[in-house]
Length: 133
Image (cartoon, rainbow, N blue to C red; front, side, top):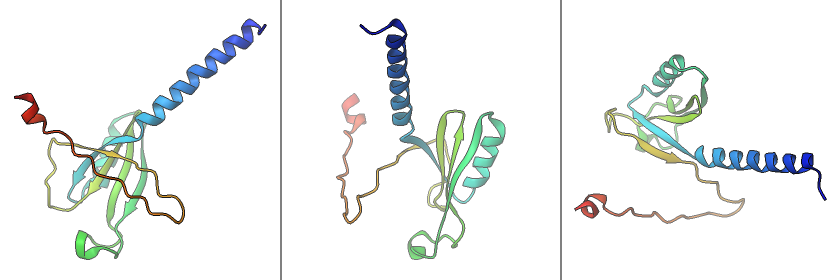
């Protein structure tokens, strides 16, 4: 028969594991804010206001795809940042859309396995406006 100490350790380990799983699921989604070219400036501003905040990875545009994105090579494309436990991404997408109150939800999709190409179908969401009528 297991001791009370062993049972308590096992119970604590289960709770800790459940917490880690919930946290990792939560962090797969993040709020994405679209900017013309001020994403890094905004991320630095926000992380300067909130405690327990930090700048994460910064991805820059390259020459590849210039004909599509029209952004100077070396300029910031995305900035990941964290405010307390919430993760955000600032996207410098150019002037196509102006910054406003709207947000996007971005999700990390696991990369394809070595030597394969993975294609995922796009899932269309129901028209919520029609459903509400």
